Image 1 (cartoon, rainbow, N blue to C red):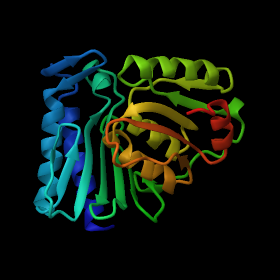
Image 2 (image 1 turned 90 degrees about the vertical axis):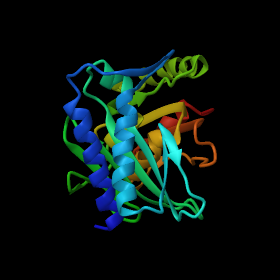
Image 3 (image 1 turned 90 degrees about the horizontal axis):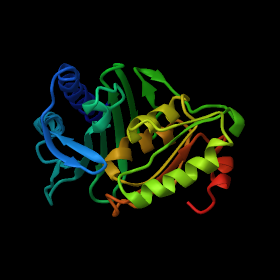
Image 4 (image 1 turned 60 degrees about the horizontal axis):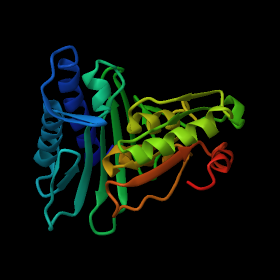
Length: 256
C-alpha cells in the first residue's frame, strides 16, 4: 500500500469518526437550501481531512465541497467530499460517507479513490491499476446479466430540471428492472455497484467530489462509467453500471 493510499484511509476514517460521534447529537446548520442542507460538520469533516493530508503532503492541494486550498506549484490534487449524503446524515438516516480521490495536477491522471461509510464501518479503496477492495477483500461488479434481475439507483440532483429528468428516467427504468432505489449518496451508489450490491446508477448535475473516488472504484472493479469532463466540476452527468448490463441499461436511456 502506498503512502498516498495510507493517508487517504487515515483521513477518511478520521473524518468518519467525527461523523459517527455526532450522529445522534443535534447538528448546527450553516445553510438551508431548496434541495440541500449545509452543516457545520461538513466544514469540520473537510478540515480534518485536509489536516491529515497536508500533514503528510504539505505541498499538495485540496479541492472540496466546502472550499479549495490550491497551490499552483502542487503536483497533486485531492478531491474531497466530507459528507456525501448530508441530508441523510442530518435526518438520522445512516446512509452517507466520506469520499476522497487523488489525481495528478499536470495531466489529471487519477491515482486512487477511497470511500468510507462510518456507520457500517465499510471502506472501499483502490489504487488505479489494481483491484479495488472492501475492508481489504477484493471486489468485483455483479455478474447479473438480465435487466429483470437488476437493482438500480436513480439520483434526482438539486435542480427542478434535473429532478424532472430523473422522474422521466425512473418511469422508463422501473418497469424493466427488479427494483429501483433512490438512496441519497452518489459515492455509495458507485461503491455498491463496484461490490455487486447494485447494478447501475444514473444522475445528472452533480459535482466531481461526489463521484471521483466512486468512478475509479467502479472502473477497476470491472464496471463501466461514461466519460467525465474534469473541467466541468459542478455539472456532471454520470451513468455507471456493471459491464454485463451496461449496453442494456443505456438502450433504455439512449439520449442521456
